[in-house]
Every structure is written in structure tokens, then in C-alpha cells.
Image 1 (spheres, rainbow, N blue to C red):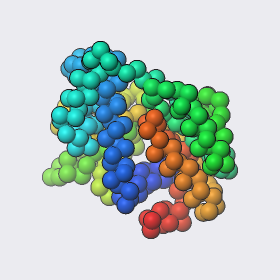
Image 2: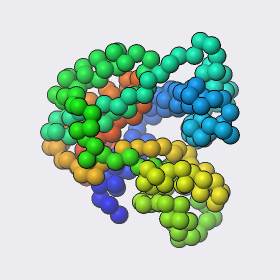
Image 3: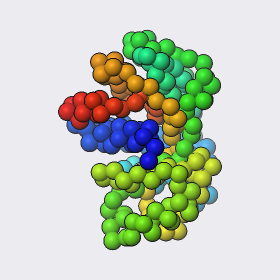
Image 4: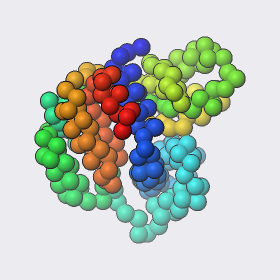
Length: 256
């Protein structure tokens, strides 16, 4: 197993169990409903002919978003007063030159840029030029499969089936199986999971770093506080970074 990927998943798993779960859940609802809205606005309200909408609805189901809220988002996107959202990405650096890649969906790009710049400045970081982190972060498909979907199944057989679907990394965590594919195999894995009767709780394209940076514990804590500020911003859909989650840092995060 690639140690960097383990670090990435470990951090995702720690966040999964945090006391701020309600706050994160509310942000997750907002983000997924925005995904549903944007997908319906761009590709039409019919999931069978709109793969992006189908994926957003699936993720909504996995997050237990009530069906009527998903339907309301689709209806709103089809109305004449539908808002336009720009999907933007930003790249920058935090303490110690740790890379930060931000994805946003906004109806006011000036507000979003100003907020992002402010958070970087307050966190002793800086907004960089797009493309400067392309050698660090590559887009990968990430599928989160709850363990309940795997009960009574032969795990060795499942692993072979996932490799057939294009899995590059398979990692068993406390509550779920994390499966990573190349960007190109994302759609293939979606279809493959349907074929083998497994439903992912969440499926998304994520920016996975190829190299990691280590900071001292105090600096790492300050850096992660900056990341939290980004995650709290309503316009920001996802934040990625290449901070190595050392055992010492993981232990500190577990105790929060």
C-alpha cells in the first residue's frame, strides 16, 4: 500500500469521526444539493440521460439526503429563475510550502476570490497561479463503499472484481472500503460497481497528491485550521492539500 495514499485516507477517516460531524453533514448536504442543481441545469433534469446528475443523486442517496430535497433542487434548476454557477479552481501554498488545491462553485466569483485570498493571508499562505501545482496533484476517481455492502461476500473475489473495474488502490478502513481509479477509469468503475451489485456511498473525482510535505506539529495544526476555514466557505466544494499526516499529528487529531 502506498504510504501517501494511506495518509490521505487516514485523514479522511479521522474527519469522518469528528465531533463536528453535524456541521460537516450540513456542508455535505449543501455541496451535494449544489452538485445536483448544477448537473440538472447544465445537462437537463432526466438522470437517465444525464450522467453527472445520476452521480449527484447517487451521492445524495449515500449521504441520506431526503428525496424531496433532491427533487426540489432539480426542479429549481429547471425553473426560469435558475442561478448560474461558475465552477472554478484555485491553487496556492500554505505554511512551509504545502500545496493547496481548491475547487469552487459560485454565483459571485469576485466574492469567492476575495474570501480565498483572505483565508490564505490569515493562514500565512498565498494564492498562486493556476497550473503551478499540476505536477503535485492528479485527478483520481475515489469510491467510498460502506462495509455493510460487503457483508457475506468473499473479499478476495471482490478485490479481483474491483481490479477488473480499474482499481489502482484498495484500502480497508474502519467503516468503509476506499477504492481509487485513474481519471480515465472513473466512469468504467461506476458502471462496473452497478454490474457487480455494489453501491458506493460516495463517488467523486478528487485531486490526489503524488508527494507529501511534513510540518512540525504546531505548524501542521495551524495549517489544518486554515484548511478548515476553506471547508467552511459556502462557495468552496472541495479542498485538497499535500500535508503528510504523521502518526503524531494523527494522534492529536484523534483527541480533538
